[in-house]
Length: 474
Image (cartoon, rainbow, N blue to C red; front, side):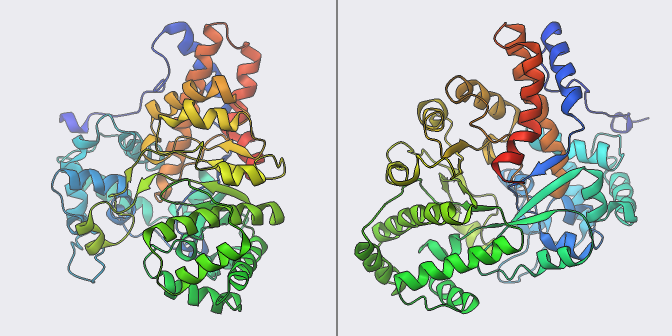
């Protein structure tokens, strides 16, 4: 038996503390939450998977091409996106031999050592597909054949996996221009799986978004509204929000470059919109418009009850060559420092004291956790803290989050965990990771006499399930 063919399994005590007594507490806590249903209220999986319930195509197109965590790491070591099947904007040639793409992953699997992607992938290989060998060059074809054979079986179709993963609710993310046909098809199919949509207005509220002016025109058509005026534009957005809500939407999602907000007088806002609509907006105007629109979205959320998520601080598409060739969201987004205290003040002056409004704040700037975000969420009734996200969605990132925000914001001003993933197969792995890390943190508090043991079991359940269910109105 070769080294690569030796039986492989994830450590059952992974991510628990090394010290024996604390590890035993963490293990006991984890056993009570490991089997809880999964709530995935913030993500980017494709609703068509669940609408059509067609088999996933093959291992490479399931694990590699759609997952920017995977191909960004490969690209950092010289593997071109087109060589692992990432589609080009111009329709140019890419590698289409899925087995060859899979072999590239196997050849480079060592790159993921120590990363959360290694845990997510190994969890999927072993726990979902039952392939109990460590992926390598030697067993790449055997792994491919094993997973491909599984994907051909009905129990590995999207809906069956959704049920097997014990997902109670999963939210995708759609533009206001989307007709939500896949969500309506799911609802009309009689399947009981709960797949929701989130309202993501970036294409029609960000003047720097590609095709913004065309998107505005499309918004007018789909909402049957006159968007040539500021009030008509706001009415169109309100109508689309109402449509999303009628299809089950409970939240909005705002991915702005910064957290800047504004509260302009109506005539000033109208004049700004006129500059934006006519294509004459400067970079300063674009930032001011995005800032005003966050406040407008908060006002609408207070009216219609949709939970508002703000996740700023990403320098999108930092690599112009990758953006030109492959488009958005291809692994070239980079975190930036983010101000929240001053940036959010106009919005909070107007709506921060509203207990009926829920605004979930995310960050890619860890320095803001204890200095800004925890004090803000620990004071304003409207604010909650989103979990570690994106580059911080890792064991160490999760641990640092709990350590830095709990002493000021507590647990109840956070919203549990959400996975923010495009990779469906990683959902149970990510939630398992979060539950293990949270239980490890709670176990330390118990061991240090900072939390009663019975309270730790209650909080573990909150973090794994109850907080997300309440915050996202699920």
